[in-house]
Image (cartoon, rainbow, N blue to C red):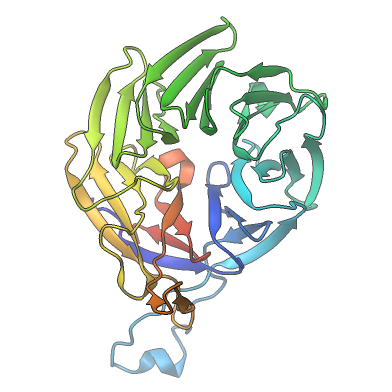
Length: 361
């Protein structure tokens, strides 16, 4: 099956760059997007009706009309953050989700009422700086794990709602940029160039040295390997048992040296997907780019141009310090693939604040 490179929906509404995307838990009907405008938006990517019903006179004409990409529906907006939203995680029952960002607190939300149920932060034992990443953990999603600019990973008890963390993992020497959780294991990636695997039951920490700053982590479903994105224009698939590098994905045209660009596994773990800083070769008309490699061979499978947004949503002109207009690009920094990489669609977003959904249809 060819790589899905056709947009099937645009999700609008954000008033700034989107920093976090996630699908609701299986079957993944909805998409949550966390934005720099301090809000989180819940979308249904399926449009409510076709743009022109089959009986309408417009579709009866024989001339093929280029089909406009439909807009998904905005279902709910969640507002409580005082700063940008940087990370999202959804509980397995889809009743709650958690968010984190510049607030130094983890927010636990009730999906239906759009109210915050708890905020983990604001005490002496809380994070002392912005929280880059958050993930549900434990049985029945009874814990939340958060990683912060303050170089620590903290574990919070959702059931008791205690204001203090139940555990603080402070081995990192620099900002914690990513966390992934599987059973009793917490894996964290840090700007200090290390991936640390904590076995919370055994009280053990194994450190793997990557070298360059780690920006994202994506674990395989069997937990035997982890995809590590880093600031040396390479994505690596690491063996968790031996710490060895199974495969490296790169391309002379693809640059990632400055920004936290997410890389994920998708297409039933056939593909490695990553965004582009757009510094190597700038896009035309504010477009962005997705790179996709074959996970086994390491061959480049697709290089997809992503428009800034639908027609009428072109980027505003920016003028540089020298007074000349600057070319803007849609730097795609966040990705999500439905059903943990095993579903039939994925979504991407970044600078433009418009979420583009791609699918196999």
